[in-house]
Picture 1: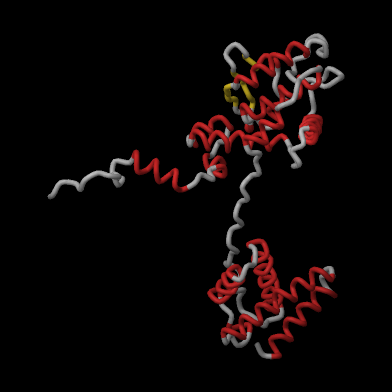
Picture 2: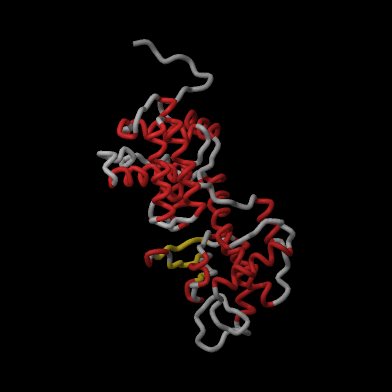
Length: 307
Protein backbone atom coordinates (compact mmCIF):
# COMPACT_ATOMS: atom_id res chain seq x y z
CA UNK A 1 0.00 0.00 0.00
CA UNK A 2 1.44 3.37 -1.05
CA UNK A 3 2.26 6.08 1.44
CA UNK A 4 -0.69 8.14 0.17
CA UNK A 5 -3.13 5.38 1.09
CA UNK A 6 -1.59 4.92 4.54
CA UNK A 7 -1.93 8.67 4.93
CA UNK A 8 -5.71 8.22 4.56
CA UNK A 9 -5.62 5.87 7.54
CA UNK A 10 -3.86 8.55 9.60
CA UNK A 11 -6.41 11.16 8.54
CA UNK A 12 -9.22 8.80 9.52
CA UNK A 13 -7.65 8.12 12.92
CA UNK A 14 -7.33 11.87 13.45
CA UNK A 15 -11.01 12.22 12.58
CA UNK A 16 -11.85 9.58 15.21
CA UNK A 17 -9.78 11.28 17.91
CA UNK A 18 -10.66 14.90 17.30
CA UNK A 19 -14.12 14.90 15.73
CA UNK A 20 -15.73 11.76 17.09
CA UNK A 21 -13.63 11.88 20.28
CA UNK A 22 -13.30 8.13 20.63
CA UNK A 23 -11.19 6.70 23.44
CA UNK A 24 -7.52 5.95 22.95
CA UNK A 25 -8.27 2.25 23.25
CA UNK A 26 -10.87 2.41 20.46
CA UNK A 27 -8.58 4.43 18.20
CA UNK A 28 -5.79 1.91 18.76
CA UNK A 29 -8.13 -0.95 17.84
CA UNK A 30 -9.08 0.83 14.58
CA UNK A 31 -5.41 1.48 13.84
CA UNK A 32 -4.52 -2.19 14.30
CA UNK A 33 -7.39 -3.44 12.14
CA UNK A 34 -6.66 -1.00 9.32
CA UNK A 35 -2.93 -1.76 9.46
CA UNK A 36 -3.84 -5.41 8.95
CA UNK A 37 -5.99 -4.41 5.96
CA UNK A 38 -3.15 -2.34 4.51
CA UNK A 39 -0.75 -5.32 4.87
CA UNK A 40 -3.33 -7.57 3.20
CA UNK A 41 -3.66 -5.15 0.27
CA UNK A 42 0.11 -4.89 -0.10
CA UNK A 43 0.46 -8.68 -0.16
CA UNK A 44 -2.33 -9.00 -2.76
CA UNK A 45 -1.03 -6.18 -4.97
CA UNK A 46 -4.12 -4.02 -4.38
CA UNK A 47 -3.05 -0.46 -5.21
CA UNK A 48 -5.24 2.31 -3.81
CA UNK A 49 -8.35 2.11 -1.66
CA UNK A 50 -10.61 2.48 -4.70
CA UNK A 51 -9.25 -0.84 -6.02
CA UNK A 52 -10.50 -2.77 -2.99
CA UNK A 53 -13.73 -4.63 -3.78
CA UNK A 54 -16.14 -6.84 -1.87
CA UNK A 55 -14.39 -10.06 -2.90
CA UNK A 56 -11.10 -8.79 -1.52
CA UNK A 57 -12.70 -7.70 1.77
CA UNK A 58 -14.32 -11.12 2.02
CA UNK A 59 -10.92 -12.74 1.48
CA UNK A 60 -9.47 -10.42 4.14
CA UNK A 61 -12.11 -11.55 6.63
CA UNK A 62 -11.68 -15.24 5.74
CA UNK A 63 -7.90 -14.97 6.04
CA UNK A 64 -8.20 -13.26 9.42
CA UNK A 65 -10.42 -16.09 10.67
CA UNK A 66 -8.14 -18.78 9.23
CA UNK A 67 -5.20 -17.15 11.03
CA UNK A 68 -6.99 -17.73 14.34
CA UNK A 69 -9.01 -14.57 14.85
CA UNK A 70 -12.29 -15.28 16.64
CA UNK A 71 -15.56 -14.50 14.81
CA UNK A 72 -16.23 -11.61 17.20
CA UNK A 73 -12.82 -10.10 16.38
CA UNK A 74 -13.37 -10.58 12.65
CA UNK A 75 -16.68 -8.75 13.05
CA UNK A 76 -14.88 -5.89 14.79
CA UNK A 77 -12.28 -5.81 12.00
CA UNK A 78 -15.01 -5.63 9.33
CA UNK A 79 -16.76 -2.89 11.28
CA UNK A 80 -13.52 -0.90 11.23
CA UNK A 81 -13.27 -1.32 7.45
CA UNK A 82 -16.89 -0.26 6.95
CA UNK A 83 -16.42 2.82 9.13
CA UNK A 84 -13.17 3.70 7.37
CA UNK A 85 -14.79 3.49 3.93
CA UNK A 86 -17.73 5.53 5.21
CA UNK A 87 -15.17 8.24 5.96
CA UNK A 88 -13.55 7.85 2.51
CA UNK A 89 -16.99 8.19 0.88
CA UNK A 90 -17.65 11.36 2.83
CA UNK A 91 -14.27 12.75 1.75
CA UNK A 92 -14.88 11.84 -1.90
CA UNK A 93 -12.00 9.34 -2.00
CA UNK A 94 -14.20 6.27 -2.59
CA UNK A 95 -17.29 5.60 -4.70
CA UNK A 96 -18.64 2.67 -2.68
CA UNK A 97 -18.16 0.74 0.54
CA UNK A 98 -16.73 -2.71 -0.32
CA UNK A 99 -17.31 -4.02 3.20
CA UNK A 100 -21.01 -3.18 3.19
CA UNK A 101 -22.30 -6.70 2.38
CA UNK A 102 -19.47 -8.73 3.95
CA UNK A 103 -20.37 -10.63 7.12
CA UNK A 104 -18.13 -12.25 9.69
CA UNK A 105 -18.25 -16.03 10.26
CA UNK A 106 -20.90 -17.03 12.76
CA UNK A 107 -19.88 -17.36 16.37
CA UNK A 108 -20.06 -20.98 17.46
CA UNK A 109 -22.64 -21.34 20.18
CA UNK A 110 -20.92 -22.53 23.32
CA UNK A 111 -22.20 -25.78 24.72
CA UNK A 112 -23.92 -25.28 28.06
CA UNK A 113 -21.94 -26.40 31.07
CA UNK A 114 -23.32 -29.41 32.93
CA UNK A 115 -22.61 -31.52 35.97
CA UNK A 116 -21.86 -35.16 35.26
CA UNK A 117 -23.96 -37.86 36.90
CA UNK A 118 -21.46 -38.43 39.72
CA UNK A 119 -21.30 -34.71 40.52
CA UNK A 120 -25.08 -34.47 40.55
CA UNK A 121 -25.39 -37.44 42.88
CA UNK A 122 -22.81 -35.90 45.19
CA UNK A 123 -24.66 -32.57 45.21
CA UNK A 124 -27.98 -34.19 46.08
CA UNK A 125 -26.60 -36.58 48.70
CA UNK A 126 -27.42 -34.54 51.80
CA UNK A 127 -29.84 -35.28 54.62
CA UNK A 128 -33.03 -33.24 54.79
CA UNK A 129 -33.01 -33.05 58.58
CA UNK A 130 -34.73 -29.68 59.06
CA UNK A 131 -37.40 -27.56 57.39
CA UNK A 132 -35.16 -25.55 55.06
CA UNK A 133 -32.96 -28.45 54.01
CA UNK A 134 -36.12 -30.43 53.20
CA UNK A 135 -37.30 -27.56 51.02
CA UNK A 136 -33.92 -27.17 49.33
CA UNK A 137 -33.63 -30.87 48.59
CA UNK A 138 -37.12 -30.84 47.05
CA UNK A 139 -36.16 -27.84 44.91
CA UNK A 140 -32.96 -29.39 43.59
CA UNK A 141 -34.47 -32.82 43.05
CA UNK A 142 -37.30 -31.18 41.10
CA UNK A 143 -34.87 -29.13 39.02
CA UNK A 144 -32.90 -32.23 38.07
CA UNK A 145 -35.90 -34.54 37.71
CA UNK A 146 -37.97 -32.33 35.44
CA UNK A 147 -35.67 -29.74 33.86
CA UNK A 148 -37.60 -26.71 35.05
CA UNK A 149 -36.45 -23.14 34.52
CA UNK A 150 -35.90 -21.08 37.66
CA UNK A 151 -38.91 -18.83 36.95
CA UNK A 152 -41.08 -21.89 36.36
CA UNK A 153 -40.08 -23.46 39.65
CA UNK A 154 -40.61 -20.41 41.85
CA UNK A 155 -43.92 -19.75 40.08
CA UNK A 156 -45.35 -23.16 40.96
CA UNK A 157 -48.52 -23.28 43.05
CA UNK A 158 -49.42 -26.12 45.37
CA UNK A 159 -52.33 -27.15 43.14
CA UNK A 160 -50.00 -27.76 40.18
CA UNK A 161 -48.25 -30.64 41.91
CA UNK A 162 -49.82 -34.11 41.65
CA UNK A 163 -47.82 -36.53 43.75
CA UNK A 164 -50.28 -39.38 43.20
CA UNK A 165 -49.75 -39.13 39.43
CA UNK A 166 -46.11 -38.00 39.88
CA UNK A 167 -46.51 -35.01 37.56
CA UNK A 168 -46.26 -31.24 37.79
CA UNK A 169 -48.05 -28.70 35.61
CA UNK A 170 -45.66 -25.94 34.54
CA UNK A 171 -46.39 -22.52 33.07
CA UNK A 172 -43.52 -21.90 30.66
CA UNK A 173 -42.41 -19.17 28.29
CA UNK A 174 -45.11 -17.52 26.22
CA UNK A 175 -47.77 -18.62 28.69
CA UNK A 176 -47.58 -22.22 27.42
CA UNK A 177 -48.46 -24.96 29.89
CA UNK A 178 -46.82 -28.37 29.89
CA UNK A 179 -47.10 -31.37 32.20
CA UNK A 180 -43.83 -33.02 33.13
CA UNK A 181 -43.20 -36.22 35.06
CA UNK A 182 -41.52 -36.42 38.46
CA UNK A 183 -38.84 -38.95 39.21
CA UNK A 184 -39.10 -41.09 42.35
CA UNK A 185 -36.46 -39.13 44.28
CA UNK A 186 -38.13 -35.83 43.43
CA UNK A 187 -41.55 -37.13 44.47
CA UNK A 188 -40.15 -38.39 47.79
CA UNK A 189 -38.35 -35.09 48.46
CA UNK A 190 -41.48 -33.10 47.63
CA UNK A 191 -43.60 -35.26 49.93
CA UNK A 192 -41.09 -34.61 52.72
CA UNK A 193 -41.21 -30.85 52.05
CA UNK A 194 -45.03 -30.82 52.09
CA UNK A 195 -44.87 -32.23 55.63
CA UNK A 196 -42.88 -29.14 56.65
CA UNK A 197 -44.56 -26.53 54.44
CA UNK A 198 -47.66 -26.20 56.61
CA UNK A 199 -45.62 -24.79 59.48
CA UNK A 200 -44.52 -21.85 57.28
CA UNK A 201 -47.57 -21.23 55.08
CA UNK A 202 -50.08 -18.56 56.14
CA UNK A 203 -53.78 -19.30 55.38
CA UNK A 204 -54.55 -19.21 51.67
CA UNK A 205 -50.91 -19.19 50.52
CA UNK A 206 -50.75 -20.89 47.11
CA UNK A 207 -46.99 -21.00 46.46
CA UNK A 208 -45.36 -24.42 46.54
CA UNK A 209 -42.00 -23.17 47.77
CA UNK A 210 -41.85 -20.68 50.63
CA UNK A 211 -39.18 -18.68 52.39
CA UNK A 212 -38.76 -18.37 56.15
CA UNK A 213 -41.41 -15.66 56.31
CA UNK A 214 -44.04 -17.82 54.62
CA UNK A 215 -44.00 -15.97 51.30
CA UNK A 216 -43.25 -17.33 47.83
CA UNK A 217 -39.55 -18.01 47.49
CA UNK A 218 -37.69 -15.53 45.26
CA UNK A 219 -35.41 -16.53 42.36
CA UNK A 220 -32.45 -14.90 44.12
CA UNK A 221 -33.04 -16.94 47.28
CA UNK A 222 -33.03 -20.15 45.22
CA UNK A 223 -29.78 -19.15 43.51
CA UNK A 224 -28.09 -18.49 46.84
CA UNK A 225 -29.31 -21.72 48.44
CA UNK A 226 -28.22 -23.85 45.47
CA UNK A 227 -24.76 -22.27 45.40
CA UNK A 228 -24.48 -22.74 49.18
CA UNK A 229 -25.27 -26.44 48.99
CA UNK A 230 -22.72 -26.91 46.18
CA UNK A 231 -20.04 -25.42 48.42
CA UNK A 232 -21.10 -27.54 51.38
CA UNK A 233 -21.02 -30.68 49.27
CA UNK A 234 -17.51 -29.85 48.07
CA UNK A 235 -18.22 -29.67 44.34
CA UNK A 236 -15.61 -27.01 43.66
CA UNK A 237 -17.64 -25.47 40.79
CA UNK A 238 -20.21 -22.69 40.71
CA UNK A 239 -23.65 -24.30 40.63
CA UNK A 240 -26.68 -22.27 39.57
CA UNK A 241 -30.30 -23.32 38.92
CA UNK A 242 -29.99 -23.47 35.12
CA UNK A 243 -27.13 -25.95 35.48
CA UNK A 244 -29.71 -28.50 36.65
CA UNK A 245 -31.73 -27.93 33.46
CA UNK A 246 -28.64 -28.37 31.27
CA UNK A 247 -27.66 -31.52 33.17
CA UNK A 248 -31.21 -32.91 32.98
CA UNK A 249 -31.32 -32.45 29.20
CA UNK A 250 -27.82 -33.80 28.59
CA UNK A 251 -28.19 -36.88 30.79
CA UNK A 252 -31.62 -37.69 29.34
CA UNK A 253 -30.37 -37.39 25.78
CA UNK A 254 -27.31 -39.52 26.53
CA UNK A 255 -29.62 -42.27 27.76
CA UNK A 256 -32.63 -42.00 25.45
CA UNK A 257 -31.31 -40.28 22.27
CA UNK A 258 -34.89 -38.99 21.89
CA UNK A 259 -34.52 -35.34 20.92
CA UNK A 260 -38.25 -34.74 20.42
CA UNK A 261 -39.12 -36.05 23.87
CA UNK A 262 -36.48 -33.86 25.49
CA UNK A 263 -37.80 -30.88 23.50
CA UNK A 264 -41.28 -31.48 24.94
CA UNK A 265 -39.99 -31.90 28.48
CA UNK A 266 -37.94 -28.70 28.29
CA UNK A 267 -40.79 -26.73 26.74
CA UNK A 268 -38.76 -25.58 23.73
CA UNK A 269 -40.88 -24.18 20.90
CA UNK A 270 -38.09 -24.85 18.38
CA UNK A 271 -36.19 -28.13 18.28
CA UNK A 272 -33.14 -26.17 17.18
CA UNK A 273 -32.90 -24.84 20.74
CA UNK A 274 -32.81 -28.40 22.07
CA UNK A 275 -30.13 -29.47 19.59
CA UNK A 276 -27.47 -27.62 21.57
CA UNK A 277 -27.55 -30.60 23.94
CA UNK A 278 -26.85 -33.17 21.25
CA UNK A 279 -23.15 -33.67 21.86
CA UNK A 280 -23.63 -37.34 21.03
CA UNK A 281 -20.71 -39.36 19.76
CA UNK A 282 -20.79 -40.24 16.07
CA UNK A 283 -20.02 -43.90 16.67
CA UNK A 284 -23.31 -44.35 18.53
CA UNK A 285 -25.21 -42.65 15.72
CA UNK A 286 -23.48 -44.82 13.13
CA UNK A 287 -24.39 -47.95 15.10
CA UNK A 288 -28.04 -46.89 15.31
CA UNK A 289 -28.04 -46.14 11.58
CA UNK A 290 -26.51 -49.48 10.63
CA UNK A 291 -29.00 -51.33 12.80
CA UNK A 292 -32.12 -49.45 11.81
CA UNK A 293 -31.96 -47.93 8.33
CA UNK A 294 -33.39 -50.16 5.56
CA UNK A 295 -30.53 -49.32 3.22
CA UNK A 296 -27.76 -49.39 5.78
CA UNK A 297 -24.83 -51.72 5.25
CA UNK A 298 -25.62 -55.05 6.97
CA UNK A 299 -22.68 -56.27 8.99
CA UNK A 300 -21.91 -59.89 8.27
CA UNK A 301 -24.60 -60.13 5.60
CA UNK A 302 -24.10 -61.44 2.12
CA UNK A 303 -24.29 -59.41 -1.05
CA UNK A 304 -27.70 -58.56 -2.42
CA UNK A 305 -29.09 -60.69 -5.21
CA UNK A 306 -28.10 -59.96 -8.79
CA UNK A 307 -30.09 -57.81 -11.15
